[in-house]
Image 1 (spheres, rainbow, N blue to C red):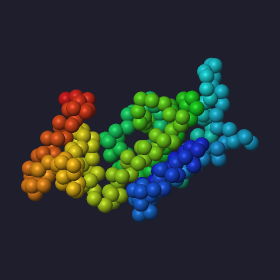
Image 2: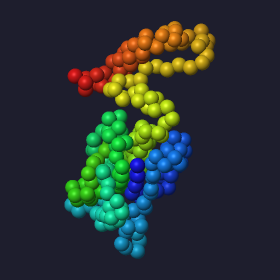
Image 3: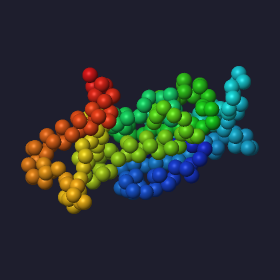
Length: 227
């Protein structure tokens, strides 16, 4: 999979992708992540990528021309399955969306800034808008990092134990059950006996029951969505 990120602050994104699972995924060739500085596609001597909004709206707006030039240059090299804009009014990012994105071959993520991007980009160039929550950030870089982290970890081969990713919270619209490790008792706090029984059929039933109970208590909205 190839991910091209268009941003005015590429340095903000290099650290999140230079460590741990995401770093190893790149080293193993499961994913390529490329950064493109939008200012490289600006046409004036100041490398400006924003301007005042028409109609007297407060705040600056990212200009259409540099963005179009950047995306056009990338599309001349390969086909893209999605051109994504990180926006607070996009569709809510969740595990199902991460699963879908993880099956694609090439995507572009455009990181917004200031008051946003010229609406014509959204109308004619962007194919999907994604939000990571009902709040506004100073820029789209952190949102892009969250989106990419969520999808890369479920690409086959990225995590050595692929069943681990398949049992994460939200994969089946339920929260994951509680997990424990050694020691089996600490300060009088004990691991549930069922997990030490070796009866994997009963353990699986216990996990399913715990997932349902945790979801009903902590995120009942997920159960409502299934109805």
